Length: 212
Image 1 (cartoon, rainbow, N blue to C red):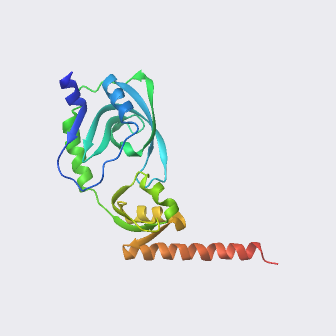
Image 2: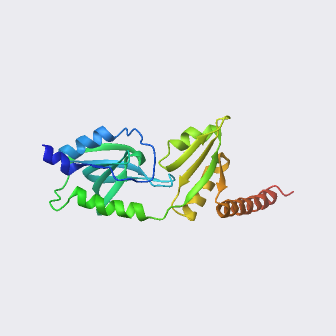
Image 3: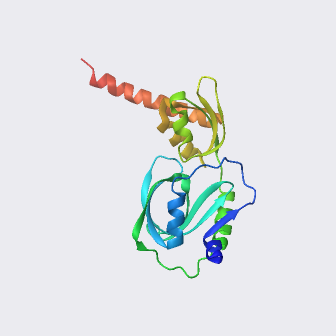
């Protein structure tokens, strides 16, 4: 019914920081799971794209915010309501079991609270240069790319929201030579120190293992 649709699907038109919308391969299947009350199993990536984990979720609604889709559901692993960005869902499976009933859940009220948290969370924008061989792959990662510009040689200059210095450091080191931090300067210096320390450590290991 129209009323049921309004209770399960929400379009939030309030302004947010700009980010291009993206196609969501799992949107149609999740829509059916929400409509028919089917529990789903997700393989979901965290924001830093370093880890993914399996989540069984009771899907309660879908929200479109500034062109981005989010699944709102009860995560059985966490034992609480959670918001999942569809772009970070690696794969999903609709399970042969009906979701539980949540008579007190109100999608609009929940989203109002969740949106406030998303909007007030700390942001840590990082500017990076990306090697041409990795540019397309990075743009396909579940990262919040605030802006990007393709260079004539195929490389990419991108500004990415990584939430914290710790997460940014992890991201930069995990990408290796495929990504170069251009800013902020403090992060670039921290990454440089860590790489030098690693080089010294592994240099010593190499010398020890190859000593006559």
